[in-house]
View 1 (cartoon, rainbow, N blue to C red):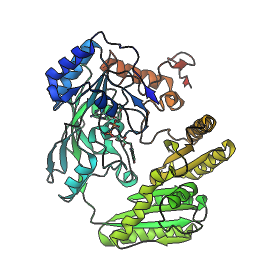
View 2: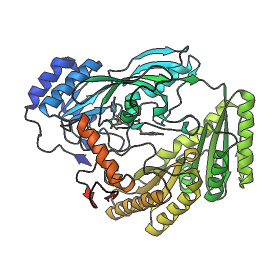
View 3: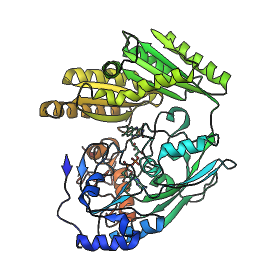
View 4: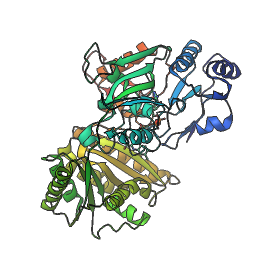
Amino acid sequence: MVHYARAARFPMKEKDLVRLCRGIVGKEHATDALEDRICHGCDATREQALPDLVVRPGCAEEVGAILSLANERRVPVYPRGAGSGLTGGALPLRGGILLDTSRLNRIISIDPADSTAVVEAGVVLGEFQAAVERRGLFYPPDPASSDFCTIGGNLAECAGGLHCVKYGVTRDYVLSAEAVLPCGDIIHTGSGTLKSVVGYDIGRLLIGSEGTLCVFTRATLRLIPLPECVRTMLASFRTVADGVRAAVRIASGPVLPRTLEIMDELTIRCIRAYKPFGLPAGAAAVLLAESDGPPAAAAAGIARMAEACRAEGAIEVETPSDKAEADLLWEVRRAASPALYSLSPRKINEDVCVPRSRLPSLFEGVAGIAARGGIAVACFGHAGDGNIHVNALYDAADPDERSRAERGIEEVFRLVLDLGGSISGEHGIGTAKARFLSWEVGGREIALMRAIKRLLDPNDILNPGKIFPDEPRISADERGSSRILP
Ligand SMILES: Cc1cc2nc3c(=O)[nH]c(=O)nc-3n(C[C@H](O)[C@H](O)[C@H](O)COP(=O)(O)OP(=O)(O)OC[C@H]3O[C@@H](n4cnc5c(N)ncnc54)[C@H](O)[C@@H]3O)c2cc1C
């Protein structure tokens, strides 16, 4: 779908805006060429909106000057890293300035003695991970988009990924950040030390704020030693219920897996149609797990996980000791997302999260919703932290199929909340889930969030139209404990 900006909201001619921005970042780094605006007006939702211009600042001071100008002239500004977001966070819904961070691309330092690194926001995560690994260090947050997503986008979304079950998410690795507020002021949060409890933890508020409170320009990140050895296991099950029970059993210890991924029957079917990986016939669920540490500990860990799978009725368990073979198993997991398109041209990809013990109820409930609604739903993802990608597949040419998929996803959200879960474990709210915010977050808390947004961005210039639904319906007075109704 293409979103066009409403009639220009800002009292300024576009050409003046381009001229002023060029005065800040240099002629070649501010453009209103249609091809640049189109290329920067999309993200991984496949939606499209058109900014009025694209600006590429080269340092925090230039970001500050752009925001200060935009704030003064009431021009919307949309920060964008690689545009790999899955909830519309970087879409320039109201036109204005698309602030591209790709020139903030320096790894400033990697310090093994302090186990820290300083990086600019536009650095590509995978390049940073490779650089620290060359120094024998490890930066665990690893969204599957690591080949192209940026550190700034990771901070803004508090990105997760496959290693979270053992190592945590992005916010667990940010010691301090340099950020520019909507008024143009540059602030520094936290401290470069491994511990610091001085004042309010502003960094934790900004991380995960989806580009609505600040533009990150630089961060000091915590590193840990690179695990010596990684061992992999792929276990297949005759039923999804067996696979889910095995995942819960593994995750409950005694060995904390480095990764613990699950794929359900429909996902496996799509992967088979996509590429012949040789998954065992009759497999209705697959678990892919890793254990890391010193070689003996990694091997012992994977053996315990294999044991847990057999105890839950696995029909086949592979634990290759050869890295090339293990890499092949991970190719199966990487194929999951693209393979779904072999069945259907479009999908709604959700990232719900439930307490791990509720995974059996989640899978059972989703299967019921899919059957009742006549929807093809494929589930795969991070079983180790209860974070499952629920994909409702549909054909965009069939409006009935699309609305059934949408209704099905709403039912999934209700189920997740009933199970004590969250409607987003890692992708954020953006525009895609704004109307569901109040399903999970109470009225008082939303009022507090809005107040924080107003305090930092009174003119609503930074990433407007995200997270908060435009017009919330209040069930009763916001002073009470009532919730904002959907
Ligand atoms: C194939 C694929 C797999 C994925 N797998 C995962 C996964 O496993 N786990 C996961 O968590 N996510 C995953 N994602 C989602 C996405 O990659 C992450 O959210 C990532 O952090 C976005 O980074 P980006 O640089 O592309 O940000 P963008 O998409 O450009 O922007 C995302 C949001 O961050 C804001 N933003 C960007 N840069 C800044 C900045 N410097 N300062 C302030 N705000 C900023 C934008 O305004 C927007 O709201 C996946 C996406 C794809 C396409």
